[in-house]
Image (cartoon, rainbow, N blue to C red; front, top):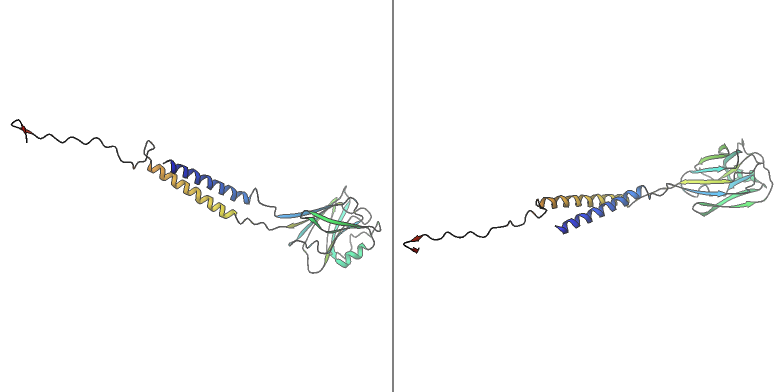
Length: 230
């Protein structure tokens, strides 16, 4: 009986643990479904541009977000590589070159002219977004080589902070097997517990134990005939 109870407790604990881990992999420990890389520049110059390949560094559309101190009008523009580079020309600018790590962008600063023509309204760009103090653009690269340009009005400094965010596929291959295994273990513990209860008597002793037998009854004494036993 004690062994059965210990086995029930062990199965229940293992089942609860497996279920907790399986559910946790889908909730508490589920990785982020996107990855964001950021860049902060104290003196970006009038323009920030991306190097070829940065926007396409990860699969899927990229969301670009820029912010600036104050409420300056900001522009995000995507254009063909030659058009963006022609607009930059000899101007001072910051180039986003790649990644220091998964969440940190690398950059390099180029000295040059302090002003450029206002890029807002140009027909060179294939996609644009504007905002006051911040701007956001979602971009999915078409065929060809395209770069991002971020600016204010060509005179004021470009945004000081830039973030690129890509979707990331998240998989939990161990979650379902653990949930199934935990459920089976708990079910097994329940069945064993009910079986143990059925086998136990009212006092908790096994009901199939041999019943207590009284001492064997004495055989009837043989009748006495003529003072002798027969």
